[in-house]
Structures are given as structure tokens and as C-alpha cells.
Image (tube, rainbow over all chains, first blue to last red; front, side, top):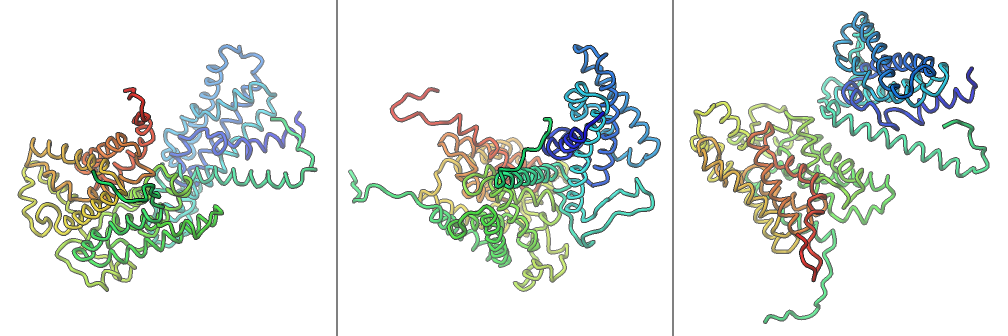
Length: 228
Length: 339
């Protein structure tokens, strides 16, 4: 089973401390390519969460039967099989979005985040912990991609949740800035993603520095227990 | 033998002295600009300067640096003036302000402030705005349509509609488009004989602005603010490549004089590529830097999709500047050159 502390450490690592996009800087290719709006970022992250949770639990269950020497090919085969399932699910149920996300769903196989978590966590830990690790690493990716996508489309188009009608047919995007907003095209192009990602990393480091300064002012506080 | 009187040890010019002289050197070009194209440029200079000072104050305050020391050094004003001169004179006020703010906040202060920026801030502003707002950045006032001073100011502040008739391409861009549309049937000499758009040796009006920059640049060289290396290498490389192609096919390639006095070549060679922060500092490095920028500027402006290539050429060479300097270290005094 899983203890409360273990769960908290896994969640904290996934969402903040080891965040895939702004700390580990993994999976930059989908990050740059699909975050032209928040919806695309969220949907790709949801697909990745599904793949990561399933692949982590599969690898963790099989970890004692996979020969160490050929573990990477075996991991990739498991991940590829799961990605195929997700790919077909998107194609069948969210076909328009599937066309927008295009190559990036099959490319989840090559996303280094998935293999990194399988190799670094699932291959060494029991299935339950591994499932949570996959989910929370994905959640960390989800909020960063959603935030980045939201900022990019707000700056680039003045809208928020563009393309939401592809997921929920009844809804329409929010027009936050006036129609006459000329649109800052750079934000929608890859350089805009790099600049905004840089700002997010700086913001994260600034938050951590502030937290560290606060801890230093109260040195009596007991250190938080946790596995790293 | 000439002997100069004492003092023999001279103090290096301070940043503010250098920046003031750069601003003075820009005056002939600005005067020609205001006289031939319109006083709108003076409004743009004011907008850019105010935006630069505001952005600079904000960043200095956020970084906890002394405001008075850095605001009065003039480096922000030089950046602002170069941006105003690079942008179309009738660009909306917010475009100039946004470009200037981006230059100061992102290209200068996020990289560490004065002296730390790897890219020339003014050229970053130009590149960002031409990528983000290609339509607005390509609207240059067409010759033959004179607007009153009041009308020009109204257009800048969005109080008058931006009609297409008052905007055209730059002479450089117009020549490229006409040659492309002509598909080999139209020759340069025929196009250049159009006296509405082209003057004695380059774009009508613009040629004298470039001549003004040349004059200011020569004065900077005489004052020892810049050395001869970068401008000579820049203009030399531009002349060589444009001359070679012009000799090869004078019908399809404009002559070197046209390229020298068109677009941003003169201001780029004397005022932007000579930036001591983002450019090279060793003598041989400066030669390579200037020649590379001149070559790239020609290739981008003639074969590329953008109206002018000087900004992108200088940014690309900025990328290589640290490496070029590393490979061009002069030998230590008294030692033999290793190479």
C-alpha cells in the first residue's frame, strides 16, 4: 500500500518540484508545437497522462520479469502499444481534435517524459506508487501546457479556449480582448513559446527562492520528510 | 616629429559621452529624414524615447539598480532612436512603443542589462515586430502623396484612417517585387528610371538620408568612437557581392551604389554593427563580423522574403560574435603570433 507521506512526495514531485516542462525541460517538441491554445495543450496532456499512468502500472507490474539488459526495448513496446490505443480512441471519438493534434499523439511514444518515468520510477517501484507517479507527472505537464497555451493564444489572438467546440460541441471560445486587437503573431510562433516558457521557468525559480528565504528566516522549523 | 603637449594620459570616454556623440552623429540623417519624408519621424523619436525611458525605469526598479545613474547614460535613448529610424515613419504609436519596450525589457535587461546583451536590442525589436506585424511594418509612405504634419501625427495616433494609398513598399522592396513579377523581362535600368520612386543613385529621398548616416558615421570615426574595421568590411562585402552579381547580369541585379544607399545598409554599417556590446571587439574579429553582416544582408534582402536583410544579418552575426572574438585574439605584445 501507499503511505500518506509517499503520496504527498509523489504529488509534490510531479506537480512542482520535478515538473516535466519547467524543471526537467523534457518533451519540448509537443510543448512548442501544440500549445498554440489552451485546449490543444490540455487535450494532449490528458492523452499523455493516460499513457503514463497505464505504462507505469504495466511496467511496474512486470518489472521483476523484464531482463535488465533489454529493458528499454521492452518499455518502448509497452508504451507504443498503449499509445496506439489512445491514438485510436482519439481518432474515433474526437476526430476533429485528432486532426489538429495530428502527429503529436503517435509521437507520445517518443516523448522522453514517458520513457523517463518508466525507467526512473516504474522499473523500481510497486504498481500503485508508479500509477500515481505517472498521473502526477502528467498533471504537472497539464497545468504548464494549459498555462502556456492560454498565454500564447491570449497574446496572439486575444481569445481563450479557442477550439473548445472540437471537444464540447456546444461551447465557443472566450473573446477576452476586443475584436480590434491586432494579434501578436510572435506569441503563436515557436519563438513566443520559448520566450514564455523562459518566463515561466524564471517565475518558478523566483517562487522557490522566496520560499527558501522564508524557511531560512525560521530555521527552527523541522525539515519536511520526503524521499527524493 | 610632432609632440603633443601634456596631459599624456587620457581618460576613456564615459558611456554617457559615447552615447551623446552617437546621438549627435545621427542628427544629419534625422534632419534629412524629417525634411524629405516628413516630420512624423520626430514624433516617432519622441514616442520611442519615452517608451525606452519608461521601460528602463521599470526594469531598473525591479532589479534594484540606481535609477539616475543608468537613466542618464543615454544607452536607452540610442536604442530608442535606432528603433524609430528603422520602423516605418507612419507606424502606429503603439507599435513603436511595443518594439522599444521589448528591446529594453527582453533584449537588454533580461540578459543582464547594459553591456551584457548578446543581441543588439534595436535589431531585436525590428525582427520581433516584422515577424509579429508584417503588414504594419511594410507600410512605408509612398512618394508623391504628401500629408500635412497634422495628418501624419493623426495617422500615428490612430485618429485618421490608414488608407492604403499612402503606404507603399520601400524602394528596395519595390525593386525586388517588380523584378520577380517581371520574370526576367524587366531590367533594373528601366525600373530605376522611374523618377517617382528612384532618385539619382538609390531610392528617391532615402538616398540622402543614407548619405546623412554616412556623414554622421564618418564623424564618429573621426571622434574615435568607432574604428574603421566594421563599416569598411560591411560596405566592402556588400559592394563585392552586389558588384559581382551586377557585372554578371546588370539587367537583374542592381548596382552596388544602389545597395549601399538603400534600406538600412548605411545606418547598419556605422551605427548598429559597430555596437561594442553585441558585436566583435578584436580588430580581425570586427573585419569578419562586418564582412559577414554585409554578405548576409545582401543575400537576405535580394533572395529572401523580407524587405531588408540588415537586421537579420546583424542578429545572425551577433550569435557568432563571441566565437569570432575567441578565434581572433591579437598576439600579446612582444610575443609571436601563433597563427
